[in-house]
Every structure is written in C-alpha cells, then in structure tokens.
Length: 190
Image 1 (cartoon, rainbow, N blue to C red):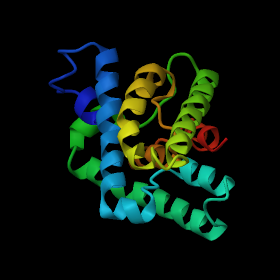
Image 2 (tube, one colour):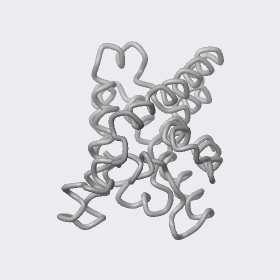
Image 3 (tube, rainbow, N blue to C red):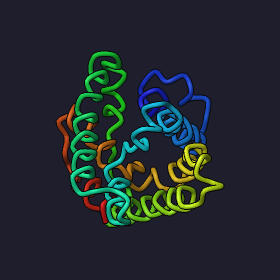
Image 4 (tube, rainbow, N blue to C red):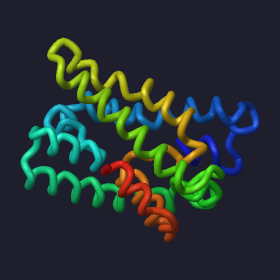
C-alpha cells in the first residue's frame, strides 16, 4: 500500500491530502494481517506476523521460548523472502517510494523512537484485551485495520509506523538501507 499510495505515478497521491492517504494506507495494509488471522493458517498459527507481538505473548507466558524463537526467525525470513516482489513487480515505482521502507520523519530520531514504542504499546494492549476476553477473542482480527488506520494517520510522519521489526526489515533489505534501522528493532521490542 505504501508504494501504491506514495510512489511516483500514484493515481491517489494527487487526488488526496497526505493525511487521507495515511488513513487509507494503514487500513489497507493491516487488512492483509486481518485476512491472515481469519484464514486456516492464521487460526493455527495465531497469525503472528510481528516479532514484537510474539515477544509480548512469550513475556505473558503464552508462548514457549522455542516457539517464540521459531516464530521470530520465520517472521524475519518471511520478510526477507517477501521483499523480493518489491524489486521484480514494483520496479521503478517501488524504488520511487523506497520500497515502502520505514524512515525517521522530520521530528527526528527521538520522536521516531518514542512513536514506535507508543504505537506498539497500543497494538499489544488492543490485542491482549481482545484475545484475553472469550467474548471478544474472535473479533481480534477485525480491530486491526481500524487501529492501524488511526496509528498510521497519527504516527507515520514520525517513523512510518512500523511497530513490526519484520515489516521494516524486508524493505530495508531490498533497498540496502539500514540507516536508523535499529529503531525498528529496539523500540517495538521494548
């Protein structure tokens, strides 16, 4: 969604203000995660596509150390494999949007770091509230597009709203740009 909405030649970019594109990007980006959560694979795996969430479940005693390690290795490996289409399918259009790479905004490193921490805290709290309640548990995937819609709108100018080390790893890898990448590992895991 980042490349489609923000890359050169985007049909939406000239028609909408940036804050509207951020709302759309957040909503649609995480709709994929919602669909994974609703799929058979998601029901088996818990739709863990984020190392920060896997770590949060581990710290809550909901995941064994070996399983957590396996999930994180798989998430990062999946990010590496998943970034290849950015080169081949998106080509110059993808390059024009830095392949969807998360970047520190004009407010600087401290703001990006704090924004990543706060947005990840919001993610973990919402997931734990829904997963921790039997009546709400089945609705957890449906909350994510709306949560990210708000989080990307508010936090993207600071850091790109990753709160997922794997999400930032793929575009950084494919663009060979790891400048300030540590923020997208350290802040969400904190």
